[in-house]
Length: 274
Image (cartoon, rainbow, N blue to C red; front, side, top):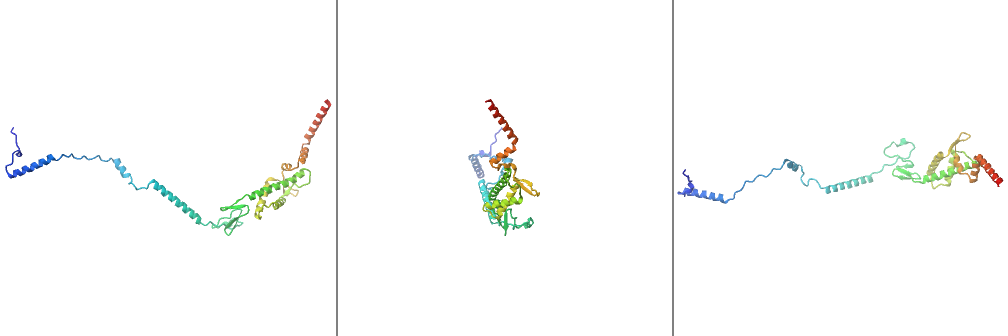
């Protein structure tokens, strides 16, 4: 085979060939001097879960920080408390209804009913003696209870002493009707007023009578009128000592007589022996 030779291996003979030869030479030199660049490979594409996560996350700064949120809640709480306090201070309380006898007179909703143990005049509440105002009610201050307990003790002592005198054979009164007890309470209160007003005295008297009704025994007089008397066991405790001894001997006469006979027989036997 005869090798074929290209036209570029022979020197150019004409001017056109000379120009073409120079262009080919410059092209070949440029190709040899420039470094070869490998084509860039595309990077790995993000996965579908990463794309979804990036799309769901809010941008930074959209929501306030935890410290800012706590400060905001504290400011709102303080503002709410201040508003509630101001509304309570500036709210005018409802007046009290005037003291009346019938509850039907409280039909008006523009006032609140007058509490027990209180007097209401022109919308103002005033508690009776022995009670102190606490909000919209009257609370007992202890003076009435102490006075009622003292008067009840004195009443029991007086009535039971009378019964004890009868047990000792002395003339005295046993049965006390309600008006007798009421008069006795009035006498005791007059001697021990404790600085009470008329209203306080009436309250103490009512309590003493209630206590007496629960303490004394109920009986009836010859006129079939209800009366009170001291229980006999309590009356015995009020008897003098000598009277208690006599009363015990009279109630146990058989035992006392038997003991006396046996004791006398014992002494007679001892004297006979010795």
